[in-house]
Length: 481
Image (cartoon, rainbow, N blue to C red; front, side, top):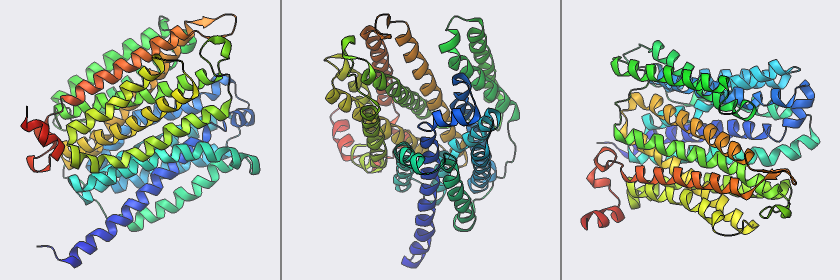
């Protein structure tokens, strides 16, 4: 039986670990949030073309998406603290290179190394779940995800004032200093994490998954310039299908797979669908809302407003997403995991309908942005809580990283499909998309959200919730069905 002194000794390093991991998530997301507003300055500084400067984001997304499953598996095998320190080192090196860059090649390399930081949140989840296993640690997961979302908003808001008083390189120097200090504190503060007895890494699976994801994301990325029917795009997508099919075949036959497709069962499939849907919803928001705001009133739907209005909408989206993520754990205790997951998807269904059934004025845009932010933050946080409950702790790093990968694929695909639909319906006289293109894009976004809602309803109760932890509201409904 634990004594109050034992509880206090356990609680103190856990609180320190939570604070430190929140700083990591906040610093990294703030860094990446500041890059978008600084993009024109970066383009001029390195002499890059518009197509080349896009690799600032493309390189980061590719490296992060490809590295995330391997980072997660390395955390399972060698312990998440060791891997976290390695990733902090790579991100710090990338930040240093980007801050020193005088050419597009060096800047792109720096951004690509920073992409490894997409593994920070899954690593944090693995560390915190090891410290406090079970439902009692789920609030910590939501807090980390919320801080990551808040940092993205903060970075976008801080970039403008910072760039007016300091050289642009300081958007890298300031986070670099925090990252170096954080790495020192991680070494001292975080409790040591035990390595797995099984040290085998599935390198064949890693190569197949990495190759498949690179082919898939590059194929989707080239769509705006080459088109969906171009040979390059079709070849890349076909290659992705072949490589990913090979990956699934290898993983099912491997004793220690890179991603254990059997761990978590149907619950993990549900989290993949939720991750995909929240990624799609967020990226579609970033494509659709700025275009509606900027379109002239003569288009029949546009506000004819500027960046300030767009920034306001995206701030509402980001703040509600950040604020809703920590609510997942207490709401799960009240409602139960399955009901909460279903309810979190409903705002993603409602937001496109708000814009479809009425003129898209500023008020409707605020409501839609808020709904998507709230639903995405709450839904994704709850999906990660399901992962924590459904997957053994020695597989948590790879499982949570894979959900992030699926979310990244949904984000990329959502942005490109939405952009392609709008490109097909340009009004020649105004040079903007016709409302019909927005209608199709909004309908598809609603369909994706409906599929996510139905999948959330199929979440197996017994896999994620012992009978003693089912929420009282969920118990009420189950007793009557």
